[in-house]
Image (cartoon, rainbow over all chains, first blue to last red):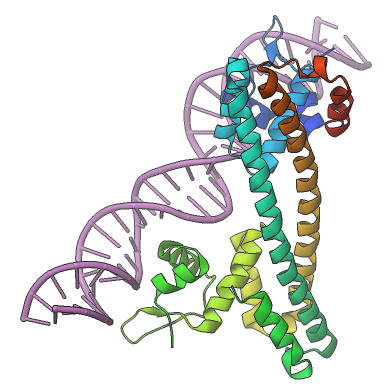
Length: 142
Length: 142
DNA sequence: TTAATCTTTAGAGTTAACTCTAAGTCAAGT
DNA sequence: ACTTGACTTAGAGTTAACTCTAAAGATTAA
């Protein structure tokens, strides 16, 4: 059993246009075509798409995803490069997580600030709660 | 005391080009100029830049950041909109965090997989550790 | 069998966010 | 005063990742 490009697109949350674009960019060398020229996505192809989505979702550019796929095609001799790539990407994800945590703290502060402002209808929040000024400086100091 | 565009850029980790671009896009209406036309960034301006960086860093497009800045200029009547924006952005960050957590699990699986492959010099990982197949299917099932 | 709905290609167009260039002005050090 | 480096503007160019179009062929349901 296999899926048309539209079905595959729906399954991974992309458009058919995007899948064709990925194909053109060399990201889908594994996808075969029927005798009449239509792309036929297998279950295994869907898995490839999910890995692509995972890497893209963590910010890896399509060019580097293609590099990974080329390594996969090349075979056993590229195992170490692929391992290195995933280790680097894990590091990148950990760093991003830390950055998002800091941003979240700032956003939460702003919410607290504007909740008080909304309650009183004005922006004199630091007059009402002077201790928030210290908190703000701590959050935005770096 | 105030900072030149180059100093300000260094302080927030951007280039002077980027700050001028932001200015052109209307993101820095608060930055004043000296009598001879040079931008002079105050401490308060640096704080604005940090808020912009925070919002940009969590994926808010520059257009919406400008919208926020326009609301700030407009005054007390926009407090509720600003609060709503930060609440939405917090939701977005929480969602992203969850997504990254899932991606990280997949990346960690790949690392385990390629570590075994590297150790043995081939990709017959599931022959050596059949239980990993179940784990993989669980991670990539959705 | 015929209409509606896919899918195909090549290639053009779009969007966001920079990034750079040129030609000139300003500021700081010697 | 002079040189060096940073600053100014307007505007052009770049990059990544789509996004769409047109014209033609394939598939499906009635």
